[in-house]
Length: 400
Ligand code: FEO
Image (cartoon, rainbow, N blue to C red; front, side, top):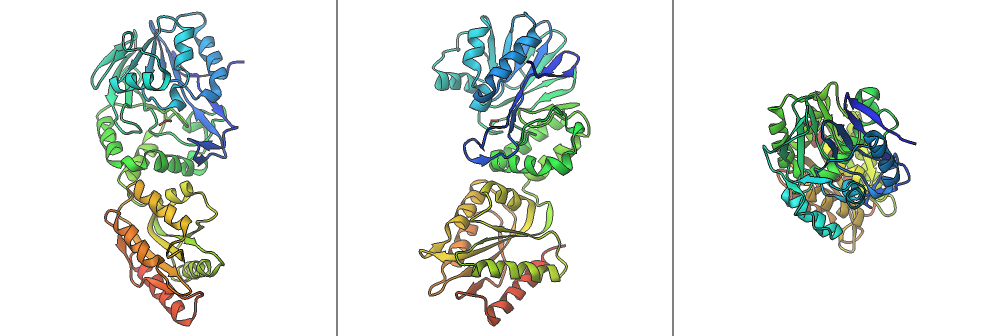
């Protein structure tokens, strides 16, 4: 049976959720599943805004057919050519003869690359300021390169103030009937997953996200319709303000996140001692992560959230312990900048992890390494405990 919701008088949400999925993009754990949004505008011309992932094709095709109720499908606007949205292009073209694809020239080329279909003769290539007349609605196209791929466009409808925003403003997690952000406790239940989604999917492209936010600020937006997560029709500033913060790599939490990699528990102990000393100095909301246990996507989100990041690592094969090294690489690959960093290393005969962490942090932009760098020999002793207290003082001093 169909599973659709009305968004405006003549626009329908026809997406679907996948709760069986374990890893989104085969890398990010999604314990709450994943939603793939698509919207069908029933105007003089019918227009589908993006498709969905292959996993929910059956539900999706039923939804689309139900809303069309026998009418033909005139346009498919492909805002983003990643397969979690466009896997259904071949089947839609087969089902709806005469369907015109509207997309950027880059996206049209990608259709051929992915599916071996040459649509160049029938597709309509659009760029910034181009429009598509549907009747009462006119879609205005906005290029949004690297949010999240280079071919991305967004579509603005002045008639309703709707911005179809592609991957932007989305979240991990399935939708549970309540497709609107004002129907859930977004700040309590969704924000953390929206941050983890943003950071991991488009966190690298803060400058490009900021450029699109600037373009969007000139529009009278009344509704944000992303391809994942909830639709925004109230209090849009809630999500837009978060995006401005995240795109600017601005920390949200005036506190420290401590990431440790420990083989037998001694480096973990140093990290826990630092956390306790910080708490005694009045620092609140401290976060401690065992990098061997917590998924990197969650720790990357924490790195974006916190003002001070502490890396504590055992020395392993003369290098940084692998899970900490992986996290550092991921942080660098996502262009995080402007954080204050504390370092603890451990080595029974030659502690070299600290030196390597300093090199890794040095490859990032605008990072400040605190003194002292604490170096432990096997286990925390009286001297290294004093150094941990010194490091706690240094962290406390750079918090408000
Ligand atoms: Fe949801 Fe970049 O695809």
